[in-house]
Length: 385
Image (cartoon, rainbow, N blue to C red; front, side):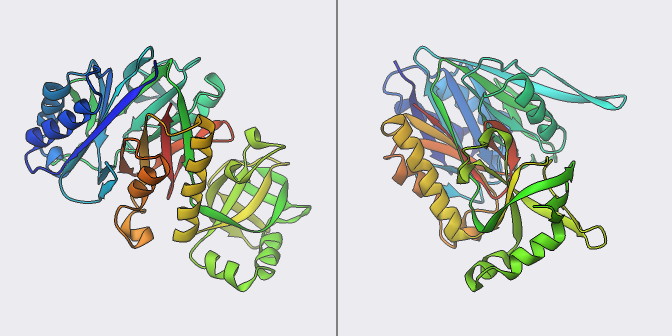
């Protein structure tokens, strides 16, 4: 038996009442099945009384496993609540599957950072991760997991709002945690990740011929900066208009070679350039032999990319999923698209009305080319079969 998923959203001004409303709606959608896992995203007044929010969810749903976090805004049931008070509750009956939640913390020991409490992910079908952006080394953990748990898709987002006292609000079971990361390991559950980086490629592909760390020295045997300048000069008027909003760089990660496609480009910002040395620096480690291409981000390409990526996943599943979890950059929404409910509405459309919920994150987590990374301006989605 596959997973059954239900979602609920409430904008009630009272934290406990709103949590009960949203959790009750999510539970009703399970059609009599017991919730094995609940994931909660809370904004506004819920962050003044996060304990009351948890009490309301447990009273209405009684899930044996629960995680969640504070959010600058939530999405669910086809709508987005980018500000104000709102809570979204995502609940799942996992059939024969299993959810194991955890709360991980990080501590500086000499010159290294030790992470404790992290669930072992080797052999898992997938994981959801909700870190605090200030106290948890998310990038370092994802790099470590790429080696220790290769091929395990990790999807999630950074908590994007704090409590009235200025602390992070992470939910684990019936506790509110102020640091670290919460997450869930999933076993026996069909999880298909979707990462829509919302960027369109411009110009030709280039091969990195010399690089160290995140600094690219040569592209196709030429000084990297010279090659970039020449490429930009050859762009047509439309492509130049696109990159005027910010030049990005896409690098094909190892897992995507040699038969890579558009979705295998890891899109990163251009951090700087050294005109004397002719080098450029990007926000990712690069190795000689990797393929690179300039990218630009705009609303049209972000809309098209999310449509395309979701269509591919629905085709792979053979139909609409049981439901989805969504993590959208807090710079999307009205700011990017100029309209309300863009990502939430698109999810409802492309997923055939399957229940979905999520939040606007301070950074999104999802796999590209087989390894999971942190992203920005991205919509990452976990689809459940």
